[in-house]
Length: 569
Image (tube, rainbow, N blue to C red; front, side):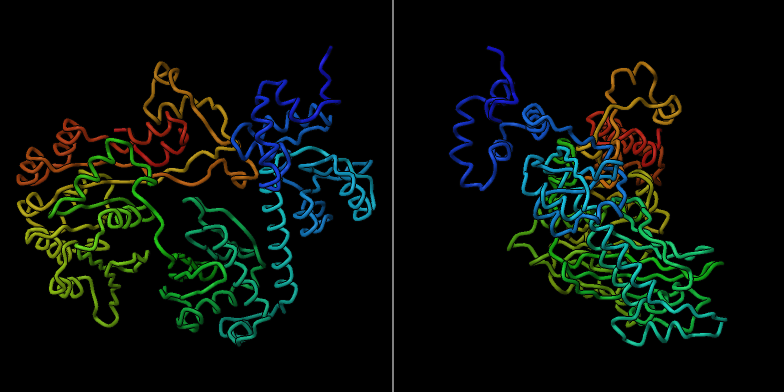
């Protein structure tokens, strides 16, 4: 007898397709009540089937067309908002588009007649259901209704804004914005900008003037993305409100200013570092968001390879010496060092940090924040730290000869010192210390490990696909056609899960230079950067480029990220 899926139960279809066994179906039926889910969702929760297998089975059973990921890329917000957000969440449905004969909607359960009937009444039109996976539906609802809320709030703020012609001396917008009125349009807009940035896990907010409007961008996963463009008439008011909140001079528009705002939102507490600088079109604001919550990173989640993890874990447990992590701003240096402190922290060890600012709070560790305006500099703070009986000291950044000199004296008197330095790679970090003014014999005697690091974006797991690199990309990456033929290149197509970027999260790449006797002798002789690099590579150091290539070959990142973040030697 022929098997007809249209007359079969879902479990029977899955067994027939070979995705599950009869025993697994029986187990799911027993546990289904405990989970409060349908049989298909229960099988997914138990790990017996994937969402794709469930969708294919439902397609065979019900005959509804499956929604393609590309259809969800750029939905019309006017169509999406035809279905109210509470209803969409409760009944797991989203409107996709309007056709001549009705509204096309995506549903996890398109056979639910009750929902279909009520949708017809809400929309006043014929409803054409399509099938969608639970995770894709959840991401789409989250993304598009968030956009609708944001757009509505921006329109409300802009709609209530009274445009005033201003000359250089006019401060009407400033007065309105700083008046403390909670419903002032500019107050609403700035609240929205900051709240949405926090929800998006942005690290920076850029508010910059253009010719006809203001551009607001967030830095997420190391890349800037535009989120809104309010009218340029609101720009002076926004700048003035930021100045008031960060206690800066609102009358000064010609010189750069720096300040900070301590915010406590419903989501979390955030310290906002504010930088305002004048441009030819007006003042630009960049706000760095620092999470004041508990530090949640572990060494094992930062992206270390097995061998690098062994080396780093061994050296951070030494009783003395200096460990320096180098790289540009935003390369994850502080995160790595704080994860290292968390790894080696115990009740018998006194750990003290001196930072500017304290980016992460670590329970059980003494953290000092420098305040140059009252004379609490790195130098003065570090001199007092020695009287606090430390075992391990973290110096936020080695900026000058004084700080470097104190760090070296700490290490030579039996302390383990962690710090950061701005340098391009590990060998140049060594020569940078000598350039600052430290004697080569002191650098060679005290250094234990120098580690350069970068952050590369990870490919979104939901839209990862094969990719054929161009000849130029292969050349830039230092690959021949023969080498490229052995690599399975990947790229994210972009989907609702990754906000159409093709990336989700970042991971570290590391270049570890262990200071052995050969390298130490080279440092004593004055620290020739090229000779140090050659000696380090002979002793097993893997370059940043090689570390990035390894992540690319493993399908974690893309060839474009490798080219963007590293240089072929």
